[in-house]
Length: 449
Image 1 (tube, rainbow, N blue to C red):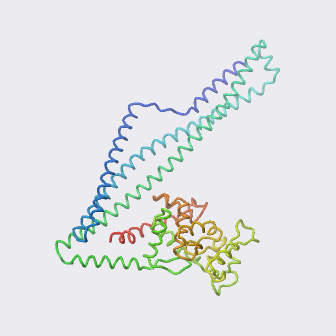
Image 2 (image 1 turned 60 degrees about the horizontal axis):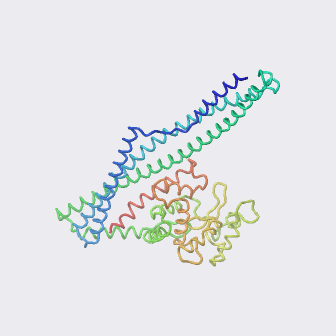
Image 3 (image 1 turned 135 degrees about the vertical axis):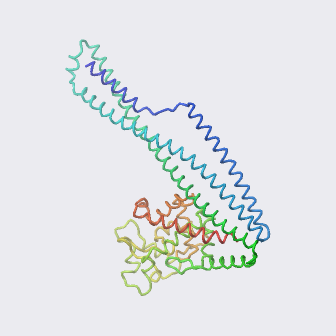
């Protein structure tokens, strides 16, 4: 019996050692890494100072009277600033790369510890079962005297307490492992955001360089007067502003008006205008399910009474009752407002450009009303719909900014709890591609005037 207890104690010591959380001592290599990190932080701080200086130069030049020299100076400042940003972003990627590498190694070590702990735990449980299989009489007879028996009994109780500690250690290591995985996920998202930002800055440099060369050519050759350039620029801006911006379930509006609504929503929610416009563009281009129900002349099966859940349907929501309340408050005919038809076997009844179902609109309507200064918001009013989408997208994390936060918000806007499913990725990818196009080819040219 004593021999078995000794063997068991050895097993336990090995198991507990396998689950100890590593403590990394400071050594010369770590000191060198720390120094390198300090150097990178100092370099980053210097770059941020230079970026701020270029921003001041840019502001000063923009306040000057319009001239070809002034525009060339502005482009030079923009190019310099973009290049400095790329340098700063590359430093951030280098820092993240090291952190990601360290965290990946830590996770691998924690995974290995958990596996070792599981194996040791299995062996301990088997040993415990062996000891438990001895009857009271066998344990007593296996000892030469009673004092030896009670000593073995105390040892066995101590082993069981240590076994509990082993369980606890496994849980602690697993918790630490999950924490490290979560941190790694955020760091990889941050790295993706920075890489996307670098590509955007590179495109900005390329466009600014082309504009600069064009202006330099004018100043040298005088083939085209600067006044003609300004007229062409104004003409292009007017064309962008007047271009129709398609909306779902309502008439299209000029892009200039859409941008005004998006900017107002940004001021209230922090959701980037280009991203908000991309969401609404994506919604208007989804296909056949665009307000083709509940219109005057539609058959009864397309009526609001049949396309959305009501109080007598086996559903978690009652859209019909809320829909009638909304129509009453707005003074609208419930049988004449366009609604989205059911799709993929689900319910229909989503309203207006932002595609809110009645129960969701009811949850948000007080916040929408407060944001736009209107007592009763209207789902089919573009201004109200823009604000509604922005508030909802902010709740989904789009106001944090960055590629991954916006793409995730877009996926949640579209698919809810199923946003991570691969079949829904097209929506997030489509929105981000549209946001890039709107930002660089529509909003930025207007801001340059």
